Length: 518
Image (cartoon, rainbow, N blue to C red; front, side, top):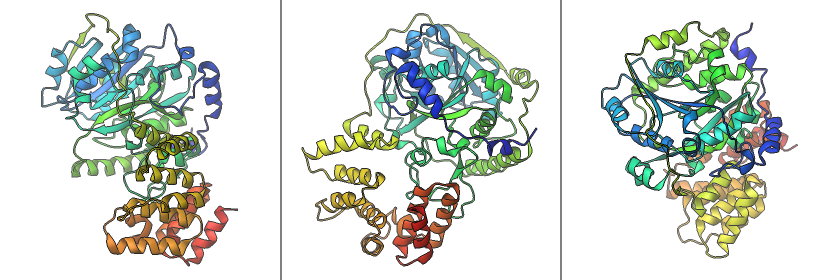
């Protein structure tokens, strides 16, 4: 037996054959669709059973919305008796327990109370009483879209060896969309603006900005490859395939949890809990697949505290130590230990079935549709819509997005033309940034440098300048070489072009950029 990391080094994540299998069975894409209902061809009369496990701590303000959305989901409406929802109250000091217990959700609901042991133990406690074939991990501040659960189940029904990653977009808790009474009256959201997920639009500007596209929708991140994002100046901690699984929403067969020994309870507090589980799942032969149609709105809350940053750093160290030195351990008796943590429990069956109501298409405006097409890389359809929009109005944001389409499809001169045609006496800084990127990609390094120099004189605090103008060329070259070594030539080329925007005559960057284009 070998350490987990050694196994990860040999596991690829090219799930192309699964895409073919799924399409032949359903007539729909496995991954590359969003905000869409399941096809009639993919419907089943007796689906796999599902347990949604929701760990909570002081979630009294969000848990009712979370559960109401699950109650009003297509899967609960169609297959109520095949859905179990488990809420684990991890020692809350607010009214979480009372809120869940007192509200008559139309769900097969199990409520569990344990002392404050942390996320990993709370999840394991929930899994210990789970009856479903599939376990969906869901945070207590998530409002799942109408078809999210059904999309997961259909894919597990056809593909036995997959961990399916869902997506999220932040929304204010004050929004009417996430109010439970409103969800019951008007229905769940049908989808989200995918560009608001960190894996699709990274929080720090730069290149790459979309981890899903950079990784070929996760396919290229097998064999322990990684993505060094713009804020990792020292190339010390890349985003690995396992890091792209967020505990806010993903699904995995229960049988795999049992084989892996559940979550590793040595990770205390926040961070890497889901990543370690995903790393173990990969080493056991599971493919990690992004499912853009399984998504939800995430009720935003304050950025993590210093304590959570410290917890993350500590857990990250444990993560690496475990995968580098240990083999898969199913942690004998973990289920019995989890059950022994239960202080109190409450089970309620639904009093009636859920009547189907009209579901609204929130957050899927024409503008959001283009954002979603750009997010998953459907540039042809995005271009069609944008050109149609521009025939009606000379909107600068449509010009900007069309310029991005041309950049991503390596039509740099067309991008330059579109971006230069934006007429404004006070050109938005984001247009100047995008135009400089297009010019650098076209080999016009001096012109790109001059543009951003002028912008730095006018608006020196422009956020994107930190990466594209102020970052030392050596940093870009270091990142570019990392990507080049892994075979990510397009990303590497952009890194070298970023170096050349800062220093147009940097010979090392010129040399490596040329190698990327061979």
